[in-house]
Length: 101
Image (tube, rainbow, N blue to C red):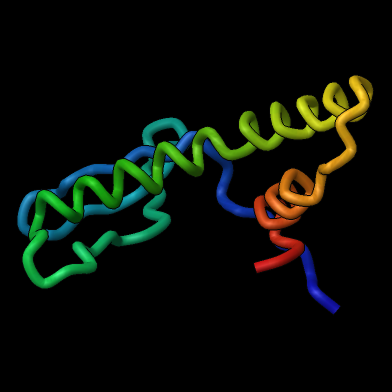
């Protein structure tokens, strides 16, 4: 049985800490909590790729709940309007909720 766990609350931000790396973090008051260290993932990207990856991950995570809620609302509207070919929508929702890989 799959156990549902909670992620660190958003919003997340990223920071390039000189000589230490690129980190995704959250701030609680004056305390910063590191969530992940981001690497470039390529042979040639270097720091520029690291920053792009961190920005992409941060934007995606911060927008996740809002986008998922909008998709669910769109599904309700489409079904109300008589559109019944909803497989791709339901699969995307399940994927976003972690029900399928």
